[in-house]
Each structure stands twice: as C-alpha cells, then as structure tokens.
Length: 437
Image (cartoon, rainbow, N blue to C red; front, side, top):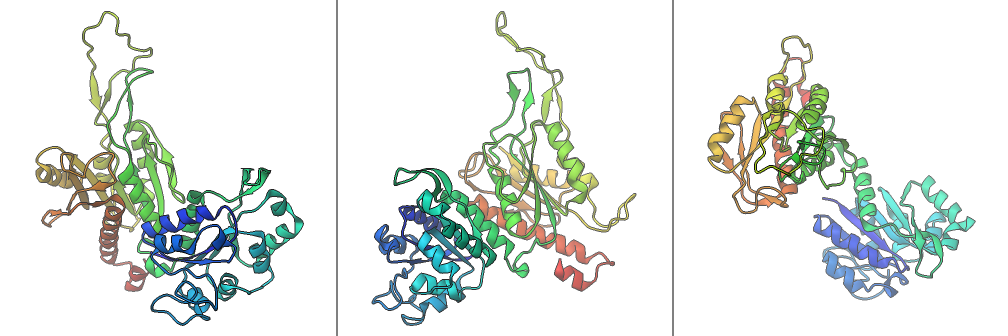
C-alpha cells in the first residue's frame, strides 16, 4: 500500500477531496492531507483528520498537531521536508489557479507549496476553477510548465460550474482521479515489489450465455467479481493481464486487456487463441456446461404449450483443454521451455473436497480454488468468499472468510511461487534469471 500526500486548495471542489481521502484510506493506503489557508475555508481540517486518522498540515509555523508533524515526526517548520520524503505520490485536488501558478514558478510561501518544492516523486494536479480562469493564457502556460516539469494533469470536466458559468473547469470525479493515481503508482512502482513483473497472466471471469432463441438464453448467477478482482491484483503485481469476460455489469479494469465474450464457445476461442502466451492462467469464469443443440431462429411462443422440451449438448471444457495443453517444460512438438501454471475454480453444493480433488487431478491443474455455494459469505454476487485451496500432493487447505480482493492477492502470491519453482527446475534457466523473474 502507498503513502499518498493529498493537497487541498481553495475551491468548492474541496468536498471531492474528502471522497479521495476516504476511498484511499479504506483501500489500505496511508493518507496525509496538506491544506492551504483558502482550502480550509471550504472543508475543515478536522474532516480530513477524521477520514485519514492523521494530523492535517495547514501552516508551517502555527500551533498544534495540524500545523506540525505527525505524532512521531519532526517539529513544526520542517514537516514539509518529512512529508516530501514520506510520500509515494503527491496529488493536489482540487488545484486552484493560484497554486498552479505558484508551482509553475517555484514559489514556496506556505506548507503545501514548500512541500511541493521538496518532493521528487510522481505527482498529479487536478485543476478546478472558473472556466474563464482555466482558459486564461496565463493558466494554460502554467499548466504547460507543470507538464514539462513532470506533473500528470487530470483535465477538468465541462459543465455548469458553481458560479453558474458553463464550460471547462469542474474538477474530475473522484473515481477518475483514483484510477489515474493508481496508474501513476503502478508506473513508478519498485520492480522488486512486483512478484509478477514480466509475466503474462490470463484470467477468465463471469458467466456465459447460451441462446435458446433470439430472446432467451441459459446462464448462471455469476457476476464476475472474483475474476475481475484477480485481474486487477495481477495488474497491480506487475503482470501484463488479459481478462476474458463473459457478460457482466462490471467496468473493464484499467490497464487490463479485456476481451468480451458471450457463449462458452466464444470463451473457448478467446482462451485457446491466447493460452500459449500465458505464463499463468486462472479460470475463474462460471462457464455453462451445456448449450441448446439447436437455437430457434424465432422466439419460442407459449401458445398451445404446456411443456417445452430442449435438447442440450455439452460445451467445450476449457479448463480440461488448458490442462492438456499447458507446458510443464519442453513438450512434444514445442521447443518453448517456458513453464505454464494453471489454476481452476470449482463451485459445489455438496461433497466439496471430493469433487474438487477429482477436478484438480482430471484437469491437470497446478492449483484449484473451491467453494461451496451454501457457505455463508461464499458464492455468487458477494464481495467475500470462503474457499478451500487444493494443490497436487498436499492436503486441502480451508481458508477463512475474506474479501475477494484479499483472496485474489493470496491466490496470485501462491501461483507466483509455483511458477518460480517450475522455472527453477528448467536447466536452461540460470539462478540469476529465476530471481529476476
């Protein structure tokens, strides 16, 4: 998790900074807030103190913890240096025309601008001001200078402003800023903290839909949350991620190559076309086992029917296909030595371990994640999961209830170890290469 320094300046958009501080803190980041005197007129420092559980900087030479350093930090007057060294990312949101001008010209006359001048890491400005102030040539020159000095700029939106003028100047929404901040953190992450750096990860997610006629289809209750959480965590751990997703209501994760599919055959085609290049494949999708043998060309009418018979046929078994094609080193017909790791998912309603062990073996998986639909906190459409992890030759490991994001981290961490162990077994890879991978 990152250390995020949030600068808040004088703008009605300061209320959006509260959302940023809250969201980042809930996500596990440590957040410190530095406010200008004008910013403190719109939202009180106490609000940010409550949201971040950290003292708020408001003045270089004032009194009390809000003006000084954190509880374990240096005395007031040099807290801007401590904060500049502490932060992994500096975000100024909202960034007023006044503060942008000061930053562009190297002016350091308060706590925030002094911290800016001492800070050397990734940094982001989120302008917020009247549309005419934003369009003013001076402001545009200042923004150009900031870009040249390495600032990322999250451009403001157009719309009706607080002053009732209409135009560009409204600060972007917190969700957009958070995505941009996450991308900036990833781009500047220490490679040694990215266990999947240099690896290609393929993830499947969501349900499939099998048409019966132009109106109806067979499907299941999967929402895709688990697969999407895995794709996002794999991205954050440094991997190049491809997500093959059935129909869901979820937005495509930022920085992930998302391939939308509908049917099981569509998903098989997408996976089989990309599987060879994947180092780690995680099959988290709930793929339909059956489809209609014949899709009716017109809507099936109810009139005159008391029953309806449908003949179903099997869909491709994507996990079994992947298990039979994965590389555990050099295989027949291939001189590619890169090992592949395959993780499957299983959802059951009875005899969880017995069915999961059978699937682990028959599908040639390196790991299987199984859960019981009847367990509280597990199953479809939840933000949590309760799973049992199975690997060949080891006893099944039941895990406690946890959030899907936390489970995704755990799964990926273990798959990274499995991949590294396989890689180390290949004689053509020396130890230095394995450590780098």
